[in-house]
Length: 294
Image (tube, rainbow, N blue to C red; front, side):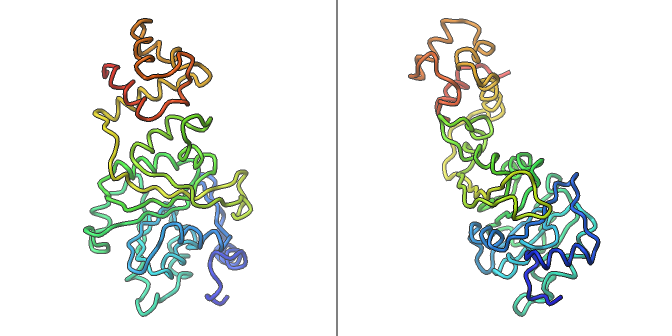
């Protein structure tokens, strides 16, 4: 089949699946994206420019990889499925512009959660320059990957991630929204969150049960003053331990004394019947600072 048909087109994807007897592996959360508009939407959302250095997590059969390369990016990919390197080698363009593929694309068979970025990327990326991360993430591992990247020594310019729509809405949620919770607060104290694109379940093969969304995360220029992040996240989780309860009820475990609890709620400037999802990040920081670290 002529390689001028994009890998992400349904006809080319089906041809590749048939040629290599590919089966989407449920245990790896594989769903192949077969919507060219969505693929180009991810590239656009990531603002890929010629010369950009991009880490791709889980390239699959190369649908997104191909478009990142054609947009001018240099791509380093992490993959855990050892059946895919052969497909990527055979199906990706042999040349990108005047450069051979191996000058513009490198694949490592490794779980990104076990990545040593400085070691893995040495000799391929210029570590003094910005790096973007782009991925169509398996649903079951979205959150661990976001936090692993946020806490790594990789100084990324942006994370452009396809994920389950419900998770995307939780990341973007504002106080007063039922989706607002510990995940929202954990991410928004580290990064700006922008929901860039919604992708229907029909855009994938095999078709998942839920829709997806593309989220762009960029590091905050100024992060909130949190002295002990681990303690802060623990306090936030405790405040949300019973979602239908008021903040006052959820705080009983942390602050057993009724008067101390009432004083703190008054200091927050909120009603005693307030629920945790109505509090701002600044108010959670104040709560955490009033509770001794374990």
